[in-house]
View 1 (tube, one colour):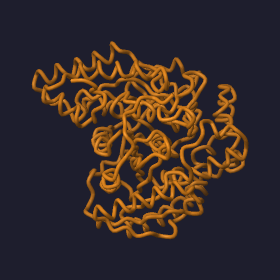
View 2 (view 1 turned 60 degrees about the vertical axis):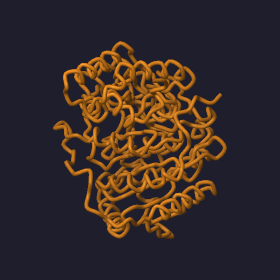
View 3 (view 1 turned 90 degrees about the horizontal axis):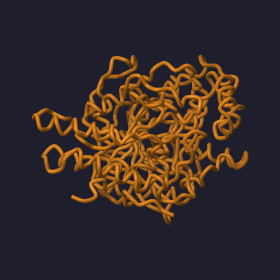
Length: 463
């Protein structure tokens, strides 16, 4: 069978478990695809073919013994370089961490192994995972396979680029302000940021922690089908005692009415016409699929929520973060920190957390009325690459456009990006949000939107 790398994760796992294809064949196909296209996009920055084939051999041996091998049996996937994978450096895009070799797997990595996945390679991110663009001084620049002139997104830009180009069937990413959702949007695939506490997390103690507490950063999947996101979430969310904030909540919640609030211009975002058209079209697709879609003039606060989320993310320990970035010398990290200084420093944690409780209650009340919210991912189409480093006005433009991504993690809510089309060769999509731990509602609505058409993938990288 040719081009196994083109299949969905669900299709490939089914073939492997039924002995129609071996895990070794799938791994070899994944490695061949990586070799063929990664030099053009630099999505995967560390991989070891012998290790990949050894993992696949273990899956084939387990199947031969009649053992259960999990829902991702033999499926090649990628892991972002900011989480621990035993024996590999957890660089987080930093020269300073090039020799920080993980002793054990992060829980999300361990869970993916338990589900039978074959870890194909490690994907790139910006230094300290700060930006919606992906480059650093240790691994270099990652390109968008659809158009090298636009960002692949960030911080999980390598993940988005890889899965769009057929390097792995699922990509692991992390998201504190859009870092799963924006690469999915920019690369024309789908991405899910789960609820806070849904996916367990733990990295071994680092000698220096250049980031604050990241109290709402979570791991999530990127994939080419919404169903593959569902399967990935099931695998990633298995319990692990190492995460004290892990929430053992069922993946399927109580039935809700198929009702969506659609907001074209949340909290003064003023999106470009192409983004408005994409959201309106997704609303039409949902209506045609039997959902009740009610257009609303506005949502609860996004602007204030995003401002406080930015302070929680970058304000806590700001001076230490800046000093670390200065030692690293990464231009993007420095541009990020210097660009937000006025809005995050000085920082009052108690005040931020108090206001967080009030604003979160307002959002919970909203989702008591509306099971799902449909809104833009960004106020703009995917940016020209490295736009945030052009000048102060461009930096402000980027941060304003990303308002819907920055805000959602503040309340610990799940957010799903579904790619819906192309403007020329530039992807566009929509964001679906639901109440905490209701990823099931996001995914159900996402499949209805997906059924109306998505950009073809995987693709060969554009020139």
